[in-house]
Amino acid sequence: MSMRQRAGLALAVLAAATTLGACGGGEEPEQSPTPSPSAPSSPAQAAPPVSEPLDATSLVSDPCAALSPADLSELGFAEGRQEAAAGAENATACVWEYAAESGNRVDLSVVTENENGLSAIYEQRSRNDYFEETEIAGYPAVHTATIDNRTDGGCGLWVGVDEKTTLFVLTNFDYGPEVSDPCPVADRVAEATIATLRG
Image (cartoon, rainbow, N blue to C red; front, side, top):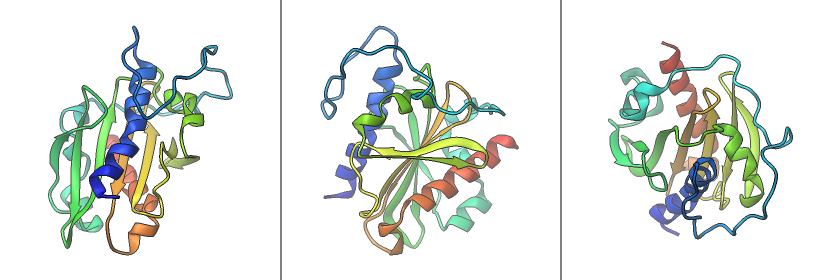
């Protein structure tokens, strides 16, 4: 499976979350079956609360500002570039490739379309191949995607930075030692982004 195919499959969860959080409907992503009607989010489905909300507005249109030059150097990334985030109409992603390994990439988007923020991701956990709760720099987070490619370079990470806004980090590695364990890289990118937002 190619890097771009993996990205598309992992980003299907982004499209599903956007549909779930939208008012007034929209098309369901083809990769996901139509869920049975259910009651609104229950406590078991809700994400942990965000105790210290962060304002990520500045990164919505300029996600590459999430990482400082020092972060890029520490992570080994080349300068980032912006792309439209696949699966979300209004999201812009920053893409960083490794300076020494172009082709291995990490994408970051700030997702604001979900009215319920990270809880929208929790509500669709049964659709995903994996769903692992974690915490990034004190903020609630989950590793999750519609297809589990964590032993093949792909890891999806969602972090709630306020009750309606999430960071979405996606790794796509084709070679190197991190192919078999990509989630720690996603975690480090999210940690650096939170440090940027804290100022």
